[in-house]
Length: 218
Image (cartoon, rainbow, N blue to C red; front, side, top):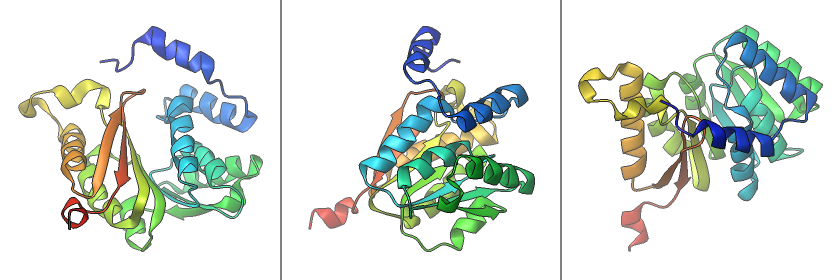
């Protein structure tokens, strides 16, 4: 199920065209290989949100060959840090190559392995935590991300409308769909998060970390 009308999406892409040669190379690779990247529309949103809070420290759960990392690395500026994680050493090496080519490698720390396990080793707090791992792992990731992002920071999670599969009856949902559905329900009811799902591309959940409502009322 398309989330955004095709004509509208074409219009948005016409406004936001990639100009950086490294970004274009990554986009062409993703299209050729059928590899899921966040794309320039979501990338721009991630950069904008990170810059809006002057983010200097970002953690990515599931970075692939570095497409989303490119956007966050631009946002954090010189001296900032983006922690890139991927379970595939080859993709991590490819990401390092792309980001070096773009002049952004000094801003990125590369980790290979399970993203959730790696985040457990980082106490934070981070300004932004971005999530794009296997969808059945989303609920576990959310609980950990809530403890690693600072108040006033953002949790940004891709694919939260999951091509419309989030609307399926529970009996028809597979493990990945169930993971996304539970993630959304938890993010919207968590007392320490203010969450909106932006219906852009495949749905982007944006959660502002706030003080627990029960504490704020005191």
